[in-house]
Amino acid sequence: AQRVTQPEKLLSVFKGAPVELKCNYSYSGSPELFWYVQYSRQRLQLLLRHISRESIKGFTADLNKGETSFHLKKPFAQEEDSAMYYCALSDIQGAQKLVFGQGTRLTINP
Amino acid sequence: EAQVTQNPRYLITVTGKKLTVTCSQNMNHEYMSWYRQDPGLGLRQIYYSMNVEVTDKGDVPEGYKVSRKEKRNFPLILESPSPNQTSLYFCASSSQGKPNYGYTFGSGTRLTVV
Image 1 (tube, helix red, strand yellow):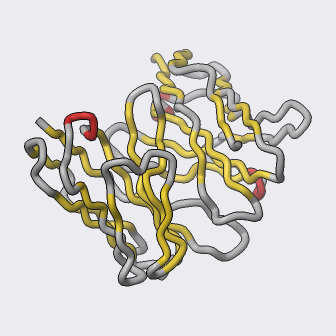
Image 2 (cartoon, chains in turn orange, blue):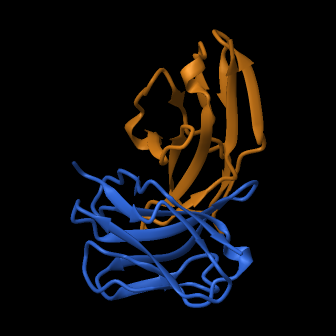
């Protein structure tokens, strides 16, 4: 079965420090991985897709199939990065059902 | 503007009183889905629909119904709400095409059942 684990419910870092949000998954097939972000009182927004290998708002994420991980990283955190972050997995062959992790609340301290 | 619209944004109701949360998308997406978001549990899928008249259960379907009579609309129905259905609900839609661009989410509906 598909499963996504975000081991940290809360993560707090200082402005300007590097940040890494961990995501591990279990899936026997070929997954597509995503990061979604939810700012305070807003809807979830797509932040990154692993397949596009893009950098959005300074965030990057690399799919490591050997470690089954898709950690989200940013070298210099900014206060506006404070939000709830969800890692999600979709079956590359299937009906695009997304399975979400439990989420990590990131707080950037000034 | 491409979007998913949910109504209402906030709803307080009493146990057992039937309610419907509406969801509409203007992107001609085939795939639509309902999630509930609870602290510590993340987002869990309630029901999804791959196209008109095609719906299926997600991970937590108990106590919910859906219908997909038109491509743009995917209402969530609670026939007899109970307090454990107090939650934040999100509707989402996606194109079935490749590549997978992920979901577009609605603004959410905060439901309280007393």
